[in-house]
Image 1 (cartoon, rainbow, N blue to C red):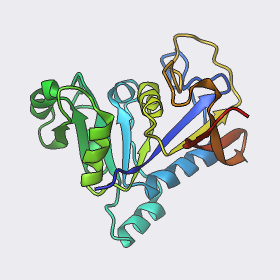
Image 2 (tube, rainbow, N blue to C red):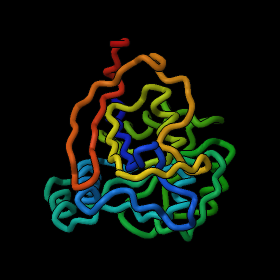
Image 3 (cartoon, rainbow, N blue to C red):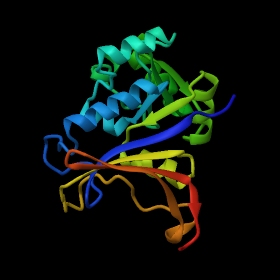
Image 4 (cartoon, rainbow, N blue to C red):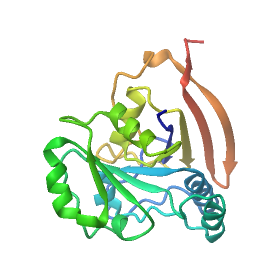
Length: 228
C-alpha cells in the first residue's frame, strides 16, 4: 500500500517558536487561520501529534465545523479523521482529552511500550508497534495499510524535525505570526538536524498569502533544488 501524503502543519512566531515558556498556551494564529486549519483537518484521513504535545496542550484535535463533518459523512468518510499519536516511552494518561472526543484513535509505539499502553488505554485506542525502535517509514507504512491517503501532522517540533530530516514530508504549512518570542527554552518548529541537501537546498514555494495579520506559506520540501 502507498504511504500517505504527509502535510506538516504549524503556527510559529517570526523567530521560529511554537510557543513561549509561560504556563499558558501562546496564541499565535487568528480565527481565520484556525478555520483554514479546520479545513485541512477535514480534508485529511488522519491527524497526528506527538505524545509531548498531547501532555503539554491536552488538545481534543477535532474538525470543529458541523458543515465539514457533514460533508465527510456525505462523502462516505468517518465524521472525524483518525487521530494518531506516536510515543516510544508509552507515558500517556487515559484522562487526556484526545481519547474522549472524535472518532477512532491509534497509538504507534515500540515493542517495549506496547503492553504498557494496551493495559493503560484499554479500548480507548488501537495500539500497534513498529518494532524495537521508532521507525517513521514503518509508521507511515502502517497508516498506508489502514487506507490513510492524507496525513496532517500537527507537531510538535521533535516530530516535525524528524520527518523533515528523513525527507518524509510532502508539504509544509506554516502560519507565521507577527510575534517574537526570543526564549531559547521555548519549543521551536524545527531543531538541529542533518536536513536533506544541507543548508543550500531551497524548497519550492507553493503558496503565500496573508490571513489577517498572519502570513501563510506552503512549501514542498521534496522539491528542493541547489543553491541559487
